Amino acid sequence: MTLSLSEDEALRPASSDEELCFESIESLSDGLLSGRFSARELVETHLRRIDRVNPTLNAYVTVLHDQALLDADESDRRRSAGESLGPLDGIPVSVKDVEPMAGVRFTMGLKPMRDNVSLTDPPHVRSFRRAGAVILGKTNTPEMGHKGVTDNLLFGPTLNPHRLTHNAGGSSGGAAASVAAGLGVLAQGSDGGGSLRIPAAMCGVVGMKASAFAVPEERRPDAFQASIPFQSIGALARTVADARVVTGLFASEPARDPSWAPTPAGSGRSVESFRIGYDATFGNFPVSTAVQEATRLAVNRISSTFAVTDLAVALPDHEELAHLWLRLISMQTAFNAETLAREGTDLLRDHRHEIPDELAALIETGLGLSALEHRHDSVLRTVVFDALEDAFTHVDVIATPTLTVAGVRNGEWGRTVGPASIEGRDVETTIGWTLTYPLNMSGHPAISIPLGTIDGLPLGLQLIGRRWSDLDLMALAGSLETILSPLNGA
Image (cartoon, rainbow, N blue to C red):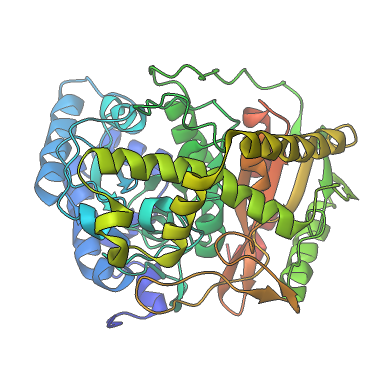
C-alpha cells in the first residue's frame, strides 16, 4: 500500500473547513441549527476529506457520495421547515461492513462476497435513518469480524492514523480509524470479543460495549445467535458524550429480538462515590511493561479524585480463556459459513484459497464441536462470570489496560494478526493479546477511553461495570476522560 500522507496529515484538518470534521455532535448540531453551515456543506467537507485521506488509511471500503448528499439535502429541508429530527440530524456517520445495509454492497470482508448487496436494514441502521444521520459509507473489517485487527484479502489492512505502519485494530478498525482521522463524526461498530474497544484503544478514540442484550439486533435465521458469545452493536466516537448519544439511540430501537432487555436508568449516584478497582493484568494476562507503566500513571492521576484500590480478579489462565473464546466464536462463525453455503457461497469447499487460515480453522472447529463440549465450555464461561461478580462485591468499577501492547504492525496483505508473545510469554494471536473478550463471555458493560501514548501509539483504559450499570459507567468514563485529557494532549 502506497503511503501518500503522513500521520500529521491523517490526524489534523488541512484547512479551516476541515476543522468541522473534528467537532463534537453537540457543536455540529448547534452549528446546523444556527446556520453556521448546512448539512450539505458539512457532508461535502467530510466527503472531500475521505477522498483525500482514505486512499492511505483504507478505513472505508464503500463510500456513498451521491446518496449522502441527497440525505444531507433532505436534512436541510427538514431544518428549514422546523422539522429537525434531533441532534444527529445531518451528522455524518458510517456503518461497519460486517453489518448489512439495504441496497449497499455487503462483503463482510470476504473476497467471495465482493459483489454481494444487502436487501435489508438492521435496527442500528434504522436508528441512524430515523435520527436523520447521514451515512457516508461502509467501513473495513476482517473477514466476518473474526480477529482483533482489521485486514482482509479483499481490501487489505486499515492503517492506524497515528502510525501508518501499524494496524487500526479490529474488528471495527475501519470505523475507529475513520473517527480518529475525521472521516466521520462517529461510527457504528460491533463487539463480540473486543471489536469496539480494541480499535478504540489503538486509534485513540472511545468504544463502548453495552451490557449483554441491552442493544437489540435482528439476526436471522437464528434470532438467538448474538449470545454466542455475547455480542453488542455500539459506537466509536471521539468523546464519551458522543458515544453515549449513539449507544442510547441504538439501545432504544424497536426490534424483533427475543433477548432484548432495555437498559434501566442510572443509579443516580454521584460518580465521585464510585469505588474503582485497578487490575494491572486482569488476572494474569501478560501485559507489556510499557503498557503497565503508562496505565499506572493514568490510574495515579485518577486516584487524586476517586477511591482507587488494587484488585486481582480471579480469572482462569489467559491461554485457557483465549481458546475458550475461540471455541465459542467458532460455533457462530461455522453457522454463518453454513448459512452462506446454503445461499450458494461455500467458503471451505469452493473458496478455501480466498479466506485466511485462521478463519478456516474457526469454521472447522465450530463444525466439529459437539453439544456436550459446548456445555462444558458454558461451565468455564460461568467461572469467568462468577470471578467478575465476586470482584464487584468490593468495587463498583474495574479498570484495566484495554490491550497488552501499544500497537500491532501490519503484516502481509490480508494476513495481519496480533503478537505471538509478550514479555516472553506466549499469547494466542487472534485475540489473546487483548484484555477485552472475557467481558463478552460474562455480558458486563465495558468502555475503552484514551489514556495517552507510547512512542506515538495510543493506549486505552478499559472500564468494566456491573451488569446493567451502563449509564453509570458512561458517566464515570466522561469524568475520567476530563482527568486524563492532559495525557492525551488536550
